[in-house]
Image 1 (cartoon, rainbow, N blue to C red):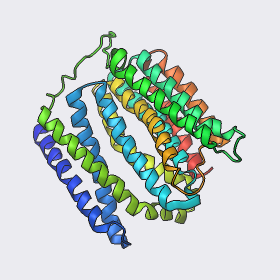
Image 2: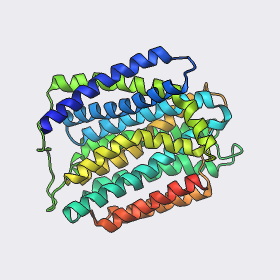
Image 3: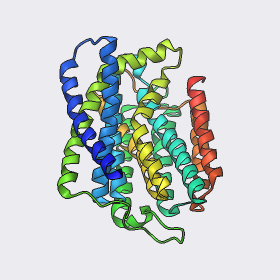
Image 4: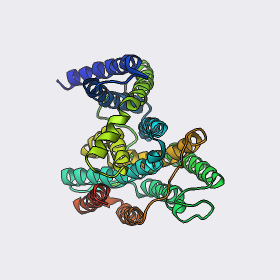
Length: 366
């Protein structure tokens, strides 16, 4: 039964990327009616799920911690594509879109995904166990990148408003790439064991024995379909971007909610994957997915939008406001206290989820 369901999911995920690309070719550069927008949205959601499915296949083939890295990079490529597509058409009102989306990704991953996984794992297995060395390194990098890219622009004086000057933006982009590269090297080469799941007795789990790894041919096919799905996601997102913005505006919500919608759309499939790992008592894999996505979101998105700002008109506002800076500081403090022991109870998961709920509330009602 389970094998049959997996086979069905695999066939579905193989068809959806082709459907997305065909639909993209038929609608590119054209005004589409509401009914077609609904179809595009449905296929877009399916393409996101298909992309993450194929990323998981590749991840299972290469193993941890490389698998988490594949997923994080795939999701970030989708996020960058959505941000640039919306910024290209949004004009001045999209000046804060990159900031809002990156900050939303940080809050969703560090509080929503981490909190949910800790809660699920601790309720199901009594306590959530993970490696504090690897998780702490990831958290320290997230905190540094978030501060350099999202907090400092509020206080710099070279340019009016919460913006970086050209030199400062270049420095932030290069720093993001360097730190992300150092983290990836640490995660996959020098200290790989820090990012592998551990048992209740602190022993490292070097392999996932829950399913047989796919063949090299299957992994290569999934890699190709992953690329096709990403093309479909980015292209179709450009087609529905006016609908997203008009819907948020019609609801009377702040434009920053657009960034929240983008981040939720992109990170939902990865959240499902992280929760699945938590249910299997692979909490370290869940934290790799969550914090790795936050790292990739900042470390890859900021350089990408910095490069895109060369030809995109309008300002690029990256600095957070006071309320969001308080939420970021609270997230860093709470996350640090969660990581240090290497163990978590439902209380820690609940604390993270409450911080995430506060972020959502303040995003809709600032």
